[in-house]
Length: 335
Picture 1 (cartoon, helix red, strand yellow):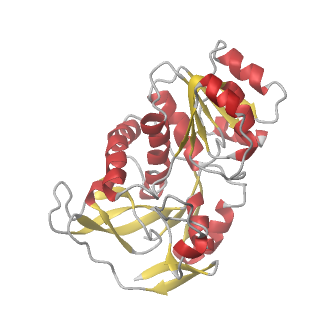
Picture 2: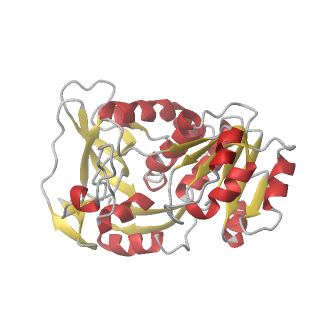
Picture 3: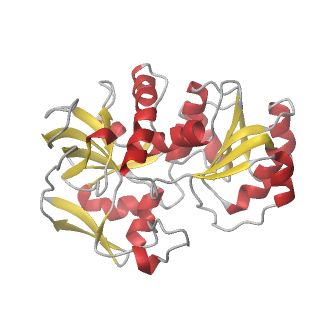
């Protein structure tokens, strides 16, 4: 089969063996696959997977050539032993490693049904971003109905998903921010609503957030940017607020006022699947799956697919994803 492979930062299409499902796994004939920011780390060898207590180095964890891609839509084409609830012919979407290939194998617990009204192209933009957003808001962020949410990098896949899921989960106030004010306008044109849309450079940023929450502050921040915005985020977090770090596109190191962290009793929470076991990951998927599938079926959730590329142009797709010009997701179609 054809599959995208990265080695020394270069992407190529190789002929590789078709993977066969083992016990508890399913094989999926891939219709489309979504690109994510983490794929850049896999391609360049900087996606550190280690589970050691001290920070592993890239040289300890990165090897090549490597298959990349983390989410797919498609049709179940084979089922391994000890699998129930999945059958050949099921239309599904799933978290799956090595997604840019004609076939993938993934745990049966990590797949969920593709809503009938969702195209395979749109469905490929769902698994990683919407599960990550739900995990950040609900499992890690502990969002309760009536609380206040801030989502930065709103034009990213996770940003688009988190804004919608926050509303679905009952947030009282949803603040969306971006470092490019054009992205805020783009989001509104796509029908993704916020209670307050802010440029992070707005000199009245803090006052506007506090006004929007009646002085309470933000209970949960879904942060995809990292260091450039941490100081500002700390100032708008409520007492007992939670900042969930799902990405660090703006930088990985930040000066943090630990006195304010202590005074406000805030929680700084890291979000990743890299150090979760297969069982933990599947549990996260299951918690999110019903909310996501029901949300799309009811018309309460939508995806924004910015551009679509064929498999042979996956290198151009990755370049466009990291260009900073997109809104929503970049998808690669395979069939």
